[in-house]
Image 1 (spheres, rainbow, N blue to C red):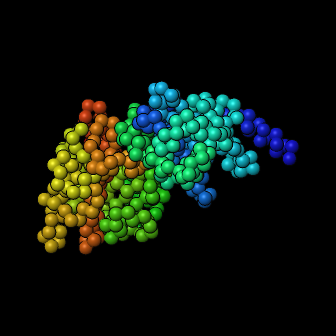
Image 2 (tube, rainbow, N blue to C red):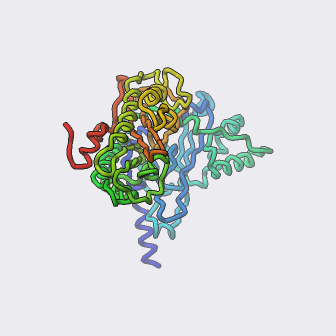
Image 3 (cartoon, rainbow, N blue to C red):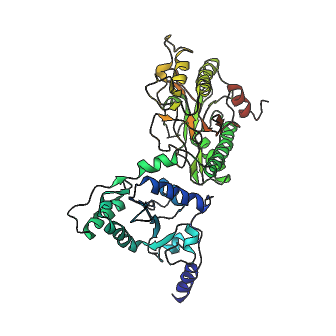
Length: 445
């Protein structure tokens, strides 16, 4: 026991790495907290870190908003941001860390707490306090101005946040706790436009995802299971330094290619079929989202190539219609002339027919795209107007169950500061000829 105590004491005297992720400078996270404070209108924001997963095989992933504001990747923490009002209340930020569990740390490794030497420098937050101090600190702020009890912003689905709001009302002698405001409506606005550091991480996620998609193309052949392809891509992601897939890999062959979010990946691929592979990874919490459709035999049939070219043409139609600050994404109405969904839909619906001579528009079953960032589906108020610094997908698709033929092509795009689109997945095959060449280890110049 003495040896164990010495080991734990030694671990506690060090400043352990709180994460193995590639973080941005502390100043970037501090600037985001200040930006959030400016939107609070003198109110108080209280955000909680994600809890640890119940199952051992589920790796820990931080709450997206919490990570965006702190870069902190340990569970059990909380962040308080007080928006200054210019008179009675000054800006304040405090990171609260939980009491260490030395027994659990034998299994998980050493954690940091408020007493860890160098913790303020390691976290980059102005002040670090023990979690036990949170009710007191919140009480101090609200007691100065009771109106702040009705201007407390938290995560709407957090049980910890609900408990703190209730406890705060009790400490202030209130009959009932005022309803907390949804802080995610504010962080959504902040997260829509990416800074240079975020864009760099998104590019690394795309690069790793491209490498995995290329490995998938080389491995696709009859007799191979869908899950085998998913496994080969997972191997590449980890080799590239990524921590996890952005979402459950979708590898759908034959009839499964017409199921949008098919994820069983249990079928064995057969000659003459097509396979839709929607799979990408996260790099340091930032996601990529890529889909390619490939022929199991290594060559598209005439009908497969026809539908593939129509889907690719729809993506190109959306790209050509794009105007920064004017174009929108994910408009399900598909009638707004400013919507990229409209441009892509009109292309699909006027090119090609089904087996009954009907237009193909009815076989496109989803929106054209979505924002990408810390979440693969980053928050946005859709239909979103696309501005410089935003990253989003363009992913038209046609799914014809009668023909067991589904095609989806998805790329990640960045709106550059000059208003032009940048294809983050430009290095990955796009055309049918390029896909076939990549499957055979060739490159089309």
